[in-house]
Image (tube, each protein chain N blue to C red):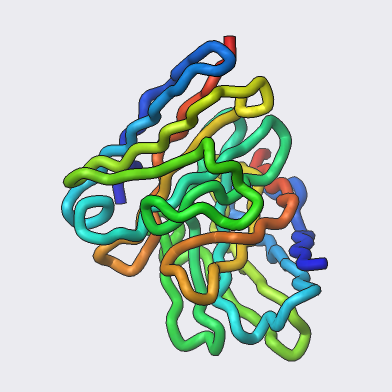
Length: 120
Length: 110
């Protein structure tokens, strides 16, 4: 079964850091680009970052550029999001999502999400 | 990276058809045939319903269809069913090699 499982969410103070992980299984992780997408409470989806299969291409939303770092370890079938200088507006459910092999910017498999709360 | 524009809500009765619009710019929706649509039920992860404007992944009913004209994409659901009640989001690839989502549309089946 194709599966993505996020972890690492929690409560953190403004200015703090957190590292999210996404464990992939059931498919050849190293072949796929991956994305992080977040959803603030009661709000819509917001794309956060993407990384190509070999980490050659990395992109960020303007709202997190310079604060968040996406990375992956293909040997461990894992995706990461290092979040620094966290702000209240970063509070959200963070989803990792697989990008379709053949279709551009198509997220065909999603995890269940991990919740990040930034509050003092 | 402004969000794509969607109506906040739409509604329809069972068996009817509804259309949700998604308006962007020539740098995203209008510039590429890389528009996707996602369905999200409360408390659940999004589910891919349409990709590349009008393609349906396997398992998605053919009641769901997509189209695009200029800078506006549309999702049409025909033969509305109770289980279609959910939030719907469009997304598009952008000229910056990023992805932008719409603000979301809440579909109510009356």
